[in-house]
Image 1 (cartoon, rainbow, N blue to C red):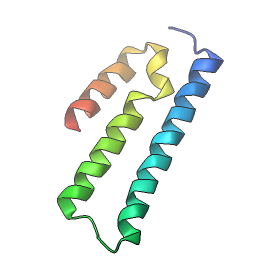
Image 2: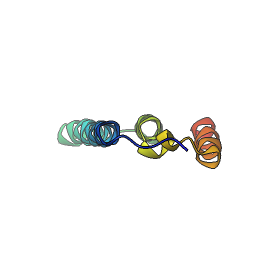
Image 3: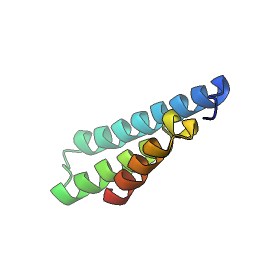
Image 4: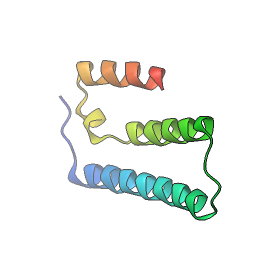
Length: 78
């Protein structure tokens, strides 16, 4: 099993934080304009955000076959 490097883990978590902040910012811009997203727009936004977070999860660095399999299944669902 691969070891987690502190800097890589930190960078992944910072990247996830940025993804979430950017996603919230986009939702806030829509809300402020009184221009609500359609259900389809919101669905696309949620899926894009989820995919971006999934790609940066630190647990993917563990090299665990079960985690990689679940990641692959979840990625395909999204």
